[in-house]
Length: 548
Image (cartoon, rainbow, N blue to C red; front, side, top):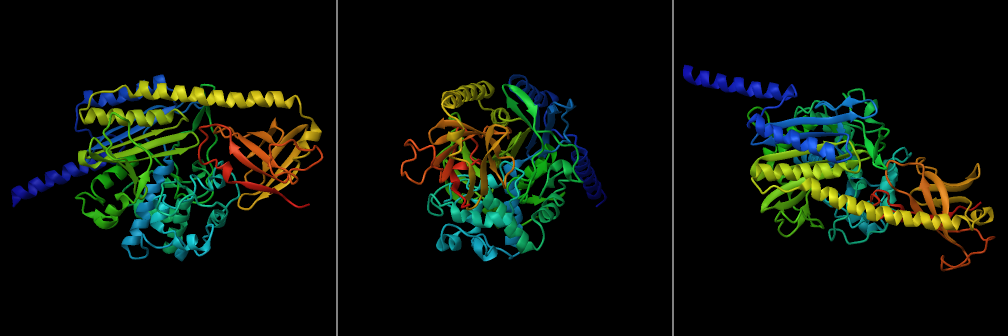
């Protein structure tokens, strides 16, 4: 017995040593220093070759924190080096937390995955009553609603609008579905916001309070914060925060903090690589945590539900060098592909100036998280670094991911730049032929049934379009054709300039020449860039002139 107690004591000592090392934000490594060094070199190579500010990398392997490192700058403007403590927006990685939080309520018998949203959110409306009654929680979480890609995202992008959850509950009434429920994959942030509202009503507390108590605290994710409203910089419990950056003419510039306005369920969680390593270990341990893995947030059945292939229509594949089988699926907050025959679960995330990816290879006991604070080339970093780490740790042949991804990006960037340049060349010629009489045809107030009012007016000799409920969508108007103008938004965090295409009451075809005396009756919109982010869903707006 004395010998057993000694062994147990030593075991307890080493467990405590590991836990204290983890919580002190150092890293425990089962490999040699040389092997850790190649991860450092990998990050430095991306910082040198790409337009990036900082990168934070966390790797777990075989039940331990294998590597934790931060590189580059948290803020270029402040010349602030990035540390492991700095928080990043994890953007859509938040969705897995939302699904897990709902899984806790499913496990407690307060919800079922098959519950209709309307049974918990009676105000919820889609294009008709049958759709409103049919959409289930699992449909919402697996992007199986049949609604168009990004439907209603203008409520949150850009930030700064006055929209509430009440607007979300009603906006889909005015956005017709493209497919039957369950027949396609169309990513939708707002259904995650509504799922967070459903949780809040079921738990009788805010989504943020629930997830912080039931997940962050229990998994000792002590730095992680869910932001309901305002920016992370205003949160009283926030530690150091990495600043977002965006590239303009190959120069990185700082962005102002994003201001959240609905809830944190779709993309409002902030964390760092250390805490995300705890999250990965939790899932790689099949939903168990604690010193002896004796605790669970929910049952094994719920854990299986989260990673099951609920939506088989995800139209994406891993790079060709990986044998990805028959394609990819979407679970509940997780994408699921096959990597050389092994299950590969992952999700990416993007907010203005923040891009990230988290990946799990359960059969390898491997988890990788890459957090960046620069747009758009952070996406090259999180993909290339993840693939390089996977290749190295699975003893695959090395591949120049940096070179390939950068080359592909430059090629597409050039094509998109050429298409935008062509639009502005037309604008330059059309502007020479227009006068105030032409512009006054469009002057006035218009209204969209879910997005509210827009005004076209002249300010100090410049004609402008202003979205009254989304003040950052305000910009100058430039003639493109007789019935079409280009809106150059003051908001420049994303490339989201748009066409405004007008119709006139006396004509069925808007491309015919209009009388200068006739007022436009309505307009629709469309992004001008081929790679405009889907969250700028201007094409779902239908503005009609407001009666005087």
